[in-house]
Length: 139
Image (cartoon, rainbow, N blue to C red; front, side, top):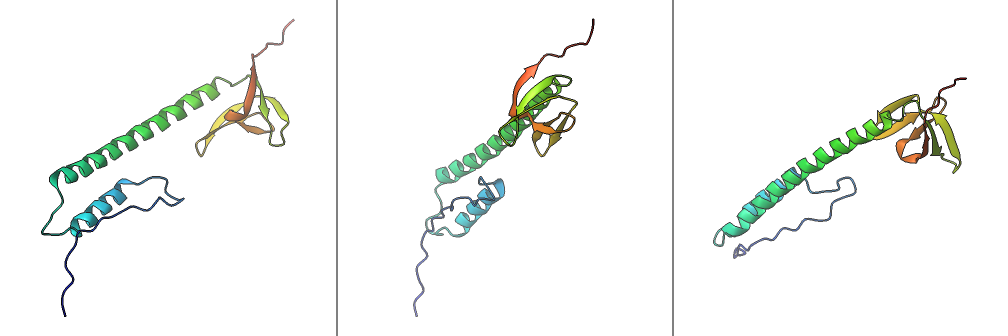
């Protein structure tokens, strides 16, 4: 019985599943290690190809850090904007398509969403259609 010759193996990544939207660092490293393990020992991976893959890994890591930083910054800006609405009367679209009018009593963050407490109801910041200036009751 003969032994099958060792051939170079090309790995391809399947499209990400719905639970993960991007190839993470761990999966990238696992693919790279599998590629190194399965390469033909008589024809090892080209140095430039290996350096290119390491550069891609570094780029992926940097992009993930930038994305995280941008998400944090955006969240802070939205929260700051929502806090500026405290005491103002707002009109927001309701779940039934109607309008909800109320004065913003509190602002809170819930799972990344900025919510405005209008006393008897809560609306998303993104549903606000109009903001009215605060008025003082005087003579």
